[in-house]
Image (cartoon, rainbow, N blue to C red; front, side):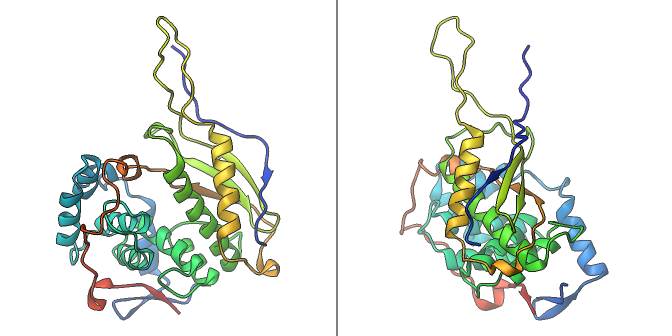
Length: 297
């Protein structure tokens, strides 16, 4: 039996780009860098005990085309301490899945999820900070959030350069989730990892999940066409992302590569065509007292 292996790219593609943590405030209280920060980073870095995203009730409702049910569940989870729910609600709002798109409100949901310890929400919120959507634009702040979420643990990049890299990574991830055909990558077959050098704008693909294949229509043939040209799709998304993020200050970018993982979990996106965004489906806006938005000073 032939074994499928992740794609590895030995080369680097130069993508045309537009060339210490203080305190993190949650619920009005300082999150001092130290034991508390280490505990949260550890919980983000080791989510083995957490249920898979695809098994969350909100995700299940979207997958079954039940947008009314998904929105009802989202509204019921407004004030809960379910960080994964906050992440899913943020993504629904950010991409217009089952609801009218609202990138500002999405930022608030990601911020709440981050305050509840959800790593995916923290990385999405960092992207929003880097873009300036729903909050003031700042690559410095984005980098602080990404570092607390576990990126660049050896501090090879400056906080500013990390924030820029993290923002490009977030936008490229979203573009891939929205563009890839259903089943493009097989679930649980590895991570999509890239090396990115903010100073030189060079990006190289280290590995991808296993690529899915079309079902053979030729009787007796074992030849199956890949659903996606993974290297081309990733490079195209990265180049597009680098062209749309706010232009960074070139002098503050570090000529040093960093490994980044891209989020291509299409749990929600695979089912978005079942029922598109509908203004009649409404997720109640969070009150300011419910947001628990992390603010970095």
